[in-house]
Length: 240
Image 1 (tube, helix red, strand yellow):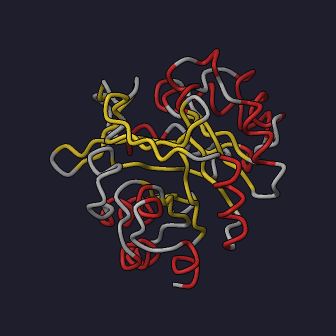
Image 2 (cartoon, helix red, strand yellow):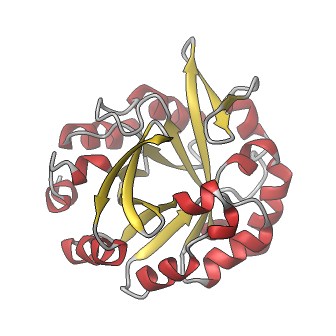
């Protein structure tokens, strides 16, 4: 299982949102490049960066920052307000290994399939933010303000014959809450679609959480707030 230490960046500062709410921001300050360098020095191969400025306003995408972070040598997957092929190209041209595509992956699968064909399956991560309703995950879009009537499983059917490889799923009810991940969700996804490399996001608070995610079949785990809050170190996470 690959660990993806995560940073959310808003206007050049490292922050965390609670359940994606821009009105519930914890500012960790610091230089995002220095944070990325620290993760690289600790042994991380990858960084997951959420460009909150780009998510809030696509015209303010922090491409120069992505370029600086990529120059450290850490492999970057990043997104935030990706809505067009030009947005994907801009992220990849800045040095990121993968562009993370969110709402468009839900609302327009054929568009994303076109991007997968153009850029390659290893250059795009489809991100599905979900709410659990009566045990079933439903994608949440538009900054988590709307929940689609179509369950995640049905959305994924559109990608059945596509080249999608990397899929990130966040249980929005657990994001930033340090209450533990929804391991049942990832176990169900890995069982239903073993062809996809699932990345788990939201709620990781302990080393045991990481062990449970690996046992559930997750190919990757995104770790954000737990590292900033000192629940464990990245070195400890990599060792376990």
